[in-house]
Length: 166
Image (cartoon, rainbow, N blue to C red; front, side, top):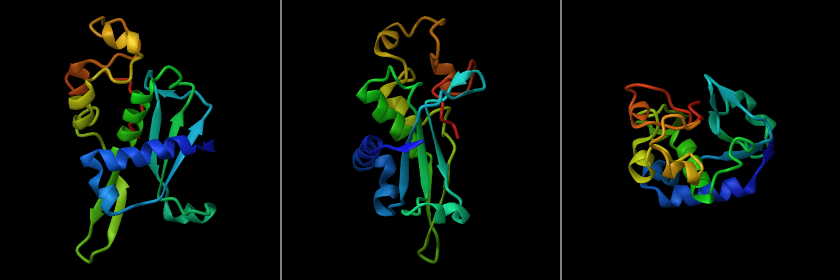
C-alpha cells in the first residue's frame, strides 16, 4: 500500500464540499489515503475502498500519527470516472464518526451506513453510482455485475456490491 496524494486531494475537496462532513471540518483528524494494487472482494462482491480507525497503540508507527486510513483498491476502481472516485472517497469519509464529549474533547470512531449506503450519496447520485457509465445507463438490467438495486440499498431484497462497508 502506498500513500496517494491524489486521494487526499479528493478527500479534502469532499470535506469542504459536503455538509454531511461538517464534523470533519470542525474537528479535523489525520487521515492516511492509501492505494492498494490488490483486488479485494468479500461476501461475493468487490470492495472498492474501506475506512479503518487506527488504534492508538499503532499510531507510533506513522510520522503523522494518523487517526484513520482509507484504502482504495485500485484494480477494482479502474473503470471509475473522476466523479465516481469522489463519491467513493466521500462514502468512506462518511464512515468517520466524530463525537464531541461533554468535557469538550473529541472521540473518533467508525459508523455504519444509515442505509446500505449513505442516504446523502443515494439522494444525490442514485443507487448505481459505482457502475461504469455505460452500465449506469442500462441499470434496469438485473444481470449487470455489481449493480446496486434500490431494494438492496434500502435493505429490502437482493444485495449490494459497492464495497467498503468496513
